[in-house]
Image 1: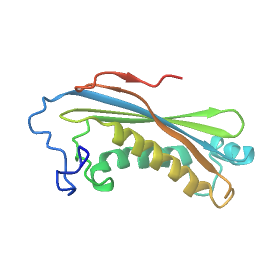
Image 2 (image 1 turned 90 degrees about the vertical axis):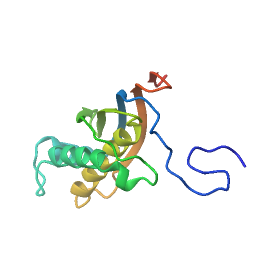
Image 3 (image 1 turned 180 degrees about the horizontal axis):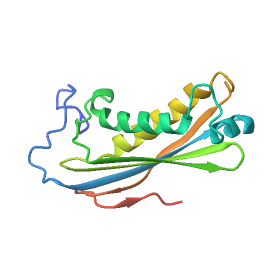
Image 4 (image 1 turned 60 degrees about the vertical axis):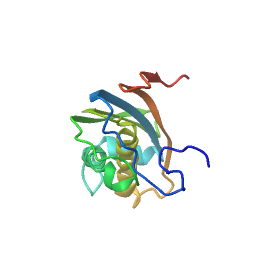
Length: 158
């Protein structure tokens, strides 16, 4: 049988044992995009949707999701996150770019937390805007950078 970190020699699922790993400062940055009709983006920018300030609700949802990633992703370690930040940028007439940065002092990285934060923030934008635009597309959710741990520093090459 192949050696996968989340399966033992008999093929049974397992959580990776991080007990012996040193605690280090770790960070991850992920991004994603939400594409929509230009009129929908205008409503978001002008805070004119009936449900309220879309980006502030999405920011809160993303932060909350980062903190609960261990409950959402099987075998993902629950982590004592020390910081989670979600930023939004209007990119052209029809796109919102989302970026999440998550930090921890721990034995395992926070890539999944950053990716989860972006995903849930994007889903929240969709949920709050679906009544005016069902054609919204969530795309390009990806890890941009991570630091700390044995594997060191990673930056996505363009």
